[in-house]
Image (cartoon, rainbow, N blue to C red; front, side, top):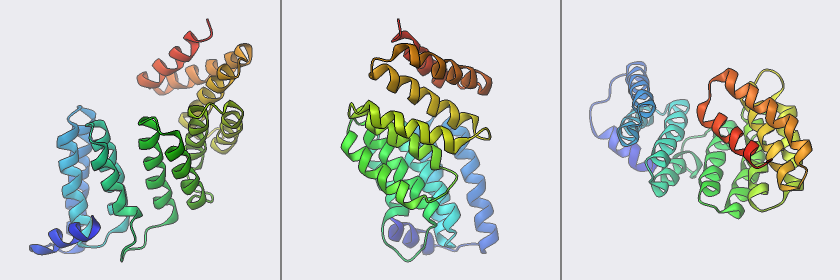
Length: 230
């Protein structure tokens, strides 16, 4: 995909790097607004334009950011195959060198795609690849929680508990969103293991954090987990 993007971008007259990167950034912001409004295909089209511009000037940070966002937009639009193709921009071997943390995020997104498709084996494989790439990157607690989700999907609640604890420790107090995700996973893993009483505290904490952060979709997940306690 990257070769095609580079070819398309280089076909016309491309402004100087700084101007090109500013254009790409503007397109990225428009794409983000379209995504927030639920217009996922429009968002994907704008992310693709931004990706072409960043590829033209070999802006690896911009390429990685737009590829990840493009995959998210295509997934939301229901085109999983297109989402996988977008991630290959970062994961495929090529002339550009992406940072390990960028590869880790792309690998984690691949894992999420497999998890959402009900493929726990594929999700586990890609989360392990992401963990190998992410020695100490900012996304570590999210990737650890995703690894726990893959374990839970495979009915391995013991492993899910272990990964939830790792994610919670890695997140610390500075990442309340990731703490909520880890706590929710911890509660759900406790429920899966029949430890309903032990699930109450982490689910209460997750719900409180998500309410403070104003995350309605995740509040709903917290309440759904609560429903399984009754």
